[in-house]
Every structure is written in structure tokens, then in C-alpha cells.
View 1 (cartoon, rainbow, N blue to C red):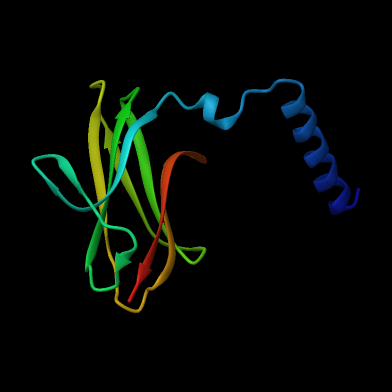
View 2: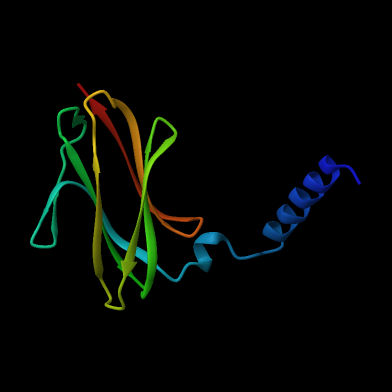
Length: 134
């Protein structure tokens, strides 16, 4: 069997599963982000919201997420112009609103569109899109 037949067959079977009522990836995750904030800093376990657009000289940004459904692990993925710039694994405890955050140093030349995602495996639980400008 040719490789393209295997790939096309797999795509068709996957599509049929989705149409037949298969659970989506978001439904499979037991973790849920109940609050997310793009922050200039975190003080006393609370985010201080960043202004958007973000100034290129900000130095560092934080992605603050409050997660329910733990324990488990989420990842924050920082993406600039379609390229993954950092991936940070974060532990989520069992409390109803577990607060966690990651930070990313932003170089002044990294202007343009950004996205930061909170993921459970391949499932995107939440995200923020923002722009860095000079």
C-alpha cells in the first residue's frame, strides 16, 4: 500500500470518528482554565495586567493562569510569528483555583504578533494573542 493511501485513509477515518460524535480534544481534558491574564508582573500571586499593544522594551511578560480540575500538568507555549519561542511545564495542584504562571523575556527586536497558549497535552485550554510594538 502506498504511503499516501495510508495517510488519506487515516484522515478519512479520523473525520468519520469526529462526525460520528467522537469526543473533541477539549472535552477530554479534565483541566480547565478559569482565568488567564497577560501580565506585566505578578504581585502577591495576582497578575498585574499588561497594556496592549506591548512596548518592545517591556523586558519580560507573564502568562498567568488559574486552573481547576487538578492535579496535573499544563504547558505554557510562547509563540512569536508562528515559531515556538519557549515551552514551560507547570504543575497544577488539586485546589479548585490553582494559580500558576510563566514568564518570557522579550527582546526589543521581537516585534510583531505573539500568542501564548495554556495546553493540556495537545489540547489548547486558553490563549492570549498580543502584539509587541516599538
